[in-house]
Structures are given as structure tokens and as C-alpha cells.
Length: 146
Image (cartoon, rainbow, N blue to C red; front, side):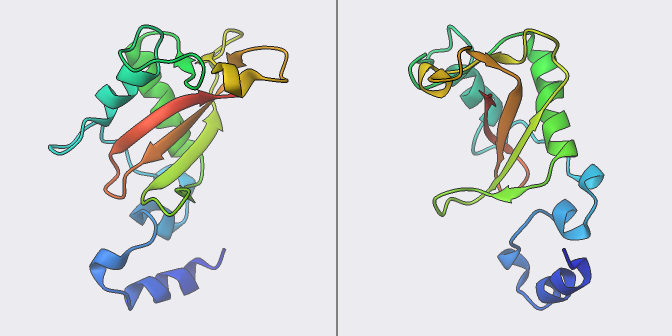
């Protein structure tokens, strides 16, 4: 990627028109921002806990994977995925960014896949995480992936 050209393009855009997080504009993935777990407007951490552990109030095994392990470990894994992977634009015209990656979670992985995700795989273990970050760097949600 031509970072100088991207920076030149961004320097002429109005401040609110930034297309990617500042850390990605600068280049190195290691400078990706620390995840903000919640803001005054939205608690992304609680949203994720409601839907993606077994027993969460919005958990549905048909279409939602579930994380296993302690919350502090999950925070570490999410931060690791954001720090070590490149941001991609969110899908379907939604704002925010997607980070995907695997973490060293051992043989049990980070969780289990939804029934839909595990079709045809021969297993339901998840070894990766997809993290969706809002434009301000706060967590929107995260869920296990194959």
C-alpha cells in the first residue's frame, strides 16, 4: 500500500471524513489502537457477553458461536487480534472495521462455532476471532470463527 499517497489524500479531507483508523493510516499493524470496551453511548463488551458465551441472554447456538474461558483472557485475545491484524472495512455499508485472526488458545480453541458455522467442517471448535470496532475505536462486538 502506498502510505504516502493515502496520507496525502487524507490530509485534504475534512477531519470527520477519515476512512480508516489513525493507526492504519500510519501503517504498521503494531500501532493499532487499544480497544475501548464501552462508551457512554454503547457498551460493546456487555453486548458481546450477552450474545456470545453459552448462557448469555441473547445466545442462540443455531446462529451464534460462543467463547469459552475467563473474561480477562477473552479481553486479551480480542486485543491481540486487533493489534496483530489489519483493519478491513465493515460489510454491507456499515461503519466501523473488522479485524480477524487466530490466537494461541491451546487445543480447545477460543470457543465453539454456531451450528450454521460448523456445517461441513466435521467439528465445532473455533480457533479465531472476528472483532468489529466502531469508528471511534470502541468495541461493537466480537465472535468466534473457524
